[in-house]
Image: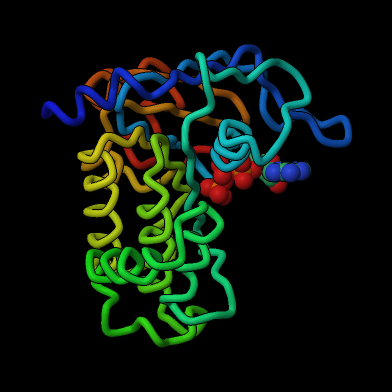
Length: 241
Ligand SMILES: Nc1ncnc2c1ncn2[C@@H]1O[C@H](COP(=O)(O)OP(=O)(O)OP(=O)(O)O)[C@@H](O)[C@H]1O
């Protein structure tokens, strides 16, 4: 951890989930979980389809209210941003998507275009600034969503399976961006069911199966000595649900 990351790490409020659960029409989709996310860590949410990864992420980000338990930030709510599997982009040019985000965040008009262009450049999109965002390829759209998040300087970034529809080159671009966010001092919570991706990116792993959080440990512990049979099978590449 470099100096900048270390300093930022002390400043990002911790997030505590206490007995947080979610039920819908009498069916428990997420069983009560206690989880504490702290420091400038890269935390990967893993588990099979339908395990509850998106649910947990939406609850943590505040997009969804738990039906039981409490979600609490220590001290203050940090700046947060979320990137989805299918980016939600406005029917405007790539550049305008970014200047709009800056406007919403109160950045003075004079500074918006230069900052937006800097971000487009950083994410390899400079040549596409005039193109309607919705005609960009999947990988380009995801980079635009990341560029937009970058401009808001999030202290915590949520990424919900951001690479599941992308080819290897586009996956690499997203993973590099995740590492850049982290190097700048952003805590990462990212879901994936790609074991190799988790090995590349994770400091910590939260493993879910059947709506239950079964493990929360360092990536080293998770991959070398998973505690539950479900995680053991998942790591062996067996079909788990
Ligand atoms: N807002 C909601 N209301 C009702 N049911 C929901 C809601 N959100 C998720 N679910 C259900 O909860 C279960 C867990 O879904 P979730 O999307 O969290 O799984 P996941 O682990 O992210 O799966 P995947 O890897 O397929 O994206 C699913 O059965 C889903 O249909």
